[in-house]
Image (cartoon, one colour):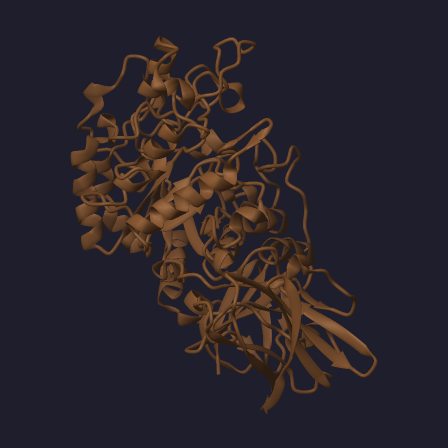
Length: 601
């Protein structure tokens, strides 16, 4: 049996609607658990193993044969908020395990068990969302607010490149604003995106705005609250969600909190920070920077102001008149952690409660670049920016003579070379340690404002970039396109990637934009891509294939990184091509890197 045929017949389960009668039960509900395998795959008996009050329990399953497959199922009462489970597959004196990492003929621990949560459903609208990341100073300008520019900001011509590595870094001012964004909503809509993720829009001492001088208003340089409300009204009419970016780990050195704390040792704001006489400026900063004072959540007053109080920062922007659709939390992994203290969990749960009590439909996303699985246990963040389990593996698989100046994001080496098998292994390492609901609620990205552009990673190769976009828009999760990626903008490192868009269209890769439009349209309209599971079908060095299957639709996705041909298992009956090369006699052929999407019978 070939490796491709084996993968397509192996026992499979995930947290999607085909395998669980519900993935958000109430305590006491009975849930039906299912797994499937090829009809000829040897299984004498199958048993569901799950935890009740921390103790393993075993439930024999029943078998049903349907066509080319066998389906095993059992209905069990759920009595805990979190239920880890896996499947025991028995053949004579041998047995195997099926868990979230895959099929194993050896004994396993519970580290990679599937996880069912008896909690309310996460926001369902993100299932069909395609986000568009905007760095406010660099996307579009109305030119209305340039007169407000602080003297220390260095004005740049709109189509100039960021210098990025001199004394002007962080204070280069290009003049993007909210009215400019409003004028370009048609571009976002034309692309096929229906969500905007703004990096910080608060007043700050830099144009990056991760050093907020206030969390109470939109920066006047961006048009202030009035311009933001105008934008939000237009976005709502166009069906575009808007989420913000909040630095819960730190504020800026010009914030009133740190100013008051420095002016008087008796100020209540003194408790908002960590004080250290051995530090030149006297207080702890993010990475030791005086410009980013680190927040101390031992202070109940700080907690009230940031998230728990009636008019806290987290709650204010989720309520009318702003009604943001969610928050992205900057360096969520560092928030509340300082030397011997670790308040991170308390803060996460506090922010989650604040979000759910204010707008239960809001998305709570955290930057967790090194991936702490404990933060994504279903009770904390809804999801994370998926660098570890998506962006980094893809960079290594699709890289091609990378024009990347500062190495591989998160690791102090150059971009490595991965096989398809190594990429998929890294993806599974991420997804198998967290509940399915957290996995599909995490943000997918090929790059961001903190990294080189993906066009640089693939050496300006059109086909490889499109293969990456194809994977971005078909894999489980919430895809996000960094503004400009859709037209082929470049950037060799984070600041270089924060380029403006030339709205004259000069230098745009219009052909690429057209192809991304097609892929985004499929993503937005597909029930399988919104609610389907993930089943790997082919995992080879240069090509991968997987299915996304829901109750309403079944899709096959094939991604190749070079010219090749790949045999698709005969058990997958192709009904129609949605995108990419035609399949002839069940064979996928590509003359270069390519993506194919096919509806299955």
